[in-house]
Image (cartoon, rainbow, N blue to C red; front, top):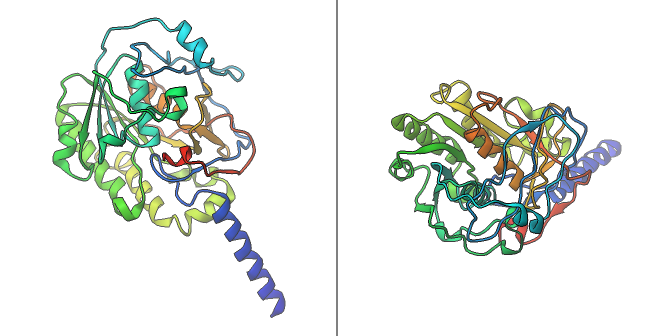
Length: 333
């Protein structure tokens, strides 16, 4: 009996350390950010480096979007990138970002503007939109405003609000970066909101969409680190049920005929873009939200995108620690 009690106590201690050491809520927009280990995995593709910019957002293409099966590449520093950037005043169309004020959504907004696109963002509180810490450099945290940016206040679970985000006639694609605390957004926000997005896209005859979910969702459960899998089956069970149902809308639901990419990132950070995005089939490491946003933009803009109809798991160069980033910046504060 004493031995059994000792083993049970050890298990509780181990679980407690897991809860303290990694994120209790992995969100694409809100909540704490976990730094994950970059465990061994098969590198399938590598993207070109992203670059930095400042507000107001320069009209230029931040990311060519070409693939390279090469060794690691790193992004140039902000000053180098700005010096090398060529002005590009051409407006190429409109990108819709759902969840635009979140940490990943703001990156998609910022980088989309920098690529020369108009951006329409939907968020519950548009006033929270700021220049992202990752791509924004010294301007990170400053209010983000641009003549090519339209922010719409509303809820993704309200069909009328979602339809307002799709009024433009030159929409090139949609990035979905939803998240938030379940207590604030509800247990089925991802599924219900994404259903509205699919309906709006079909009403407009649109095809391209990138949806950020998470490593561990769907058939990628074994690609998540062990401690994270423990959380998936306990305190995060409801979150992942919603994520799995959200993915199912595309895999075998009404969004199956769209040109979708379901993006499953590893542990999310607010670090500057690394310029390297590895699509893996092994255990996931961490990745900067700036790199996730760049991947999503390529997914909706690259005419030869090779992950249409697929669920790529992506990570980058963040090393081997499980240290949790508890900074205010990591929480979007």
